[in-house]
Length: 91
Image (cartoon, rainbow, N blue to C red; front, side, top):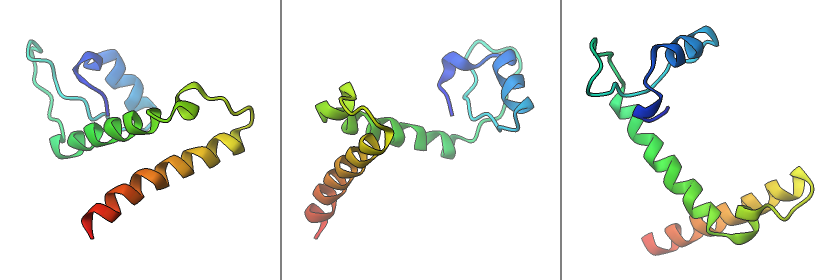
């Protein structure tokens, strides 16, 4: 999934060669309009917002941890903290 800035034939062909189905909306000035799964594209916004919320934790944004295991542990803690706020406010 990518935004309109990556709408180019070279990018699309490279993704298809790797076996990836591109979900990129076409630019408005594209001569031949290409179909896009806009339902799947909407999930991109949700994923970007999630990464933005995770990066609000300073330790994750600056990556203080030296090992991948400890960084993954703090990602899990930050994700749990976000999920818990959402879960508690719904009950």
